[in-house]
Image (cartoon, rainbow over all chains, first blue to last red; front, side, top):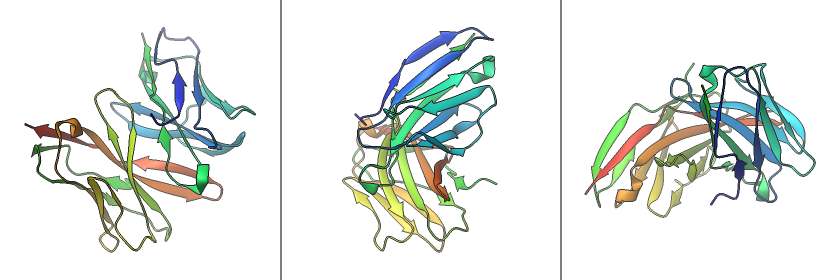
Length: 113
Length: 116
């Protein structure tokens, strides 16, 4: 158990809809990262937050947004969903004890039909 | 440009034997870090081992060791005494840092199958 929790584990929704994925980092970690894993694109970095502030953006679509709250949990919002958004979405966290390791949550599997 | 290259889409190994999974990387930064993660069929990403570019010795964690050859820009994962439970996808990743931001850049992965 990495200590990172993600909800829900599975999500099935229709095209055009909006969903919110939630992540709670390990206790003591200030950084939260979101990654997308799809068959065609592999594992791709989406966005990083550090203590509530956005720090880095990767290949994140404009239809996607994220935030990190004062209690350090994070949410990834995906809107106007398309079939191609079907993927496994991971949250990771790091920073405790000044270590570099990113610990991943179990992921949310999103299926857009 | 691809920064992490894993040239072995699939590897097979007999139980109890050692196996090496290849990873080469490309960066012009003098300070970087390399990770290996394991992803079993259940989907979770499990951190295995980390090597910093300035670390003098190769990293080891139990049956996992990292064969770090800086001049060749390679960071191969060695799994000793393979077990059936080692069957999984293995991803090599590089830590990229720019200012206050950081991210992991992943390779495409190697699927390891351990045969009894």
